[in-house]
Image (cartoon, rainbow, N blue to C red; front, side, top):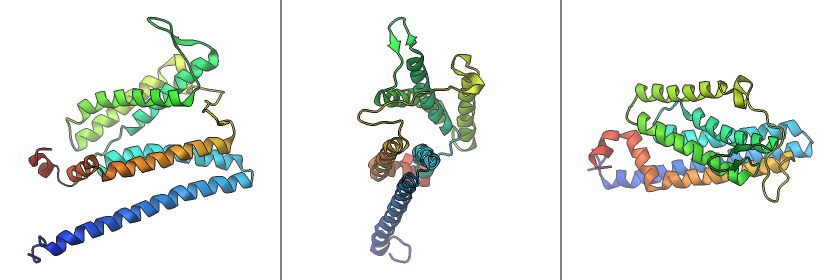
Length: 237
């Protein structure tokens, strides 16, 4: 039994190694997240506003990276279209914020929709817009595999990109300029450190949710499909 790797020793060894890897990953993530917080606090003490703004951007892109890692790192799906969802969420927030800034409703018929600078509402809208787009894109893209999947996700990302830069109502190639930072209850988001701490809290929450998802049945199924999709299909999943 031990010679072919199917014995009790191998079965007992795998969970130990997997737990060790997971603990190492958790420790590495904690070091990275803690280092980001330390840089921001040191920059605040030195009154380096630019550095605080920079680490805030790092935290935002880290959130996007965690999302990509679920598909690429855990599911083995090499996607070149992740920026499309990041951009759609950004435009959803930007368009609503610009209408609030200009005191113009987003639409008046068949019902009135006004702009807003209230972050919880903006985040919800961004998630819904990106999620609906992902549902439509995924319904097509996931019917392919390998290099075809890579190219079709890139194609969708490019289509959304060229649509955005060809949309003169919202800046076109010049982008969308917003002069007022959105608000969050109980926080002065114009203060660089306060805004960073808000983004940092969201990053910690996303890291936690990603870790829970990785350890869930769905996460383990993704991992199994990455390692051997044929066996997962044969098992009826």
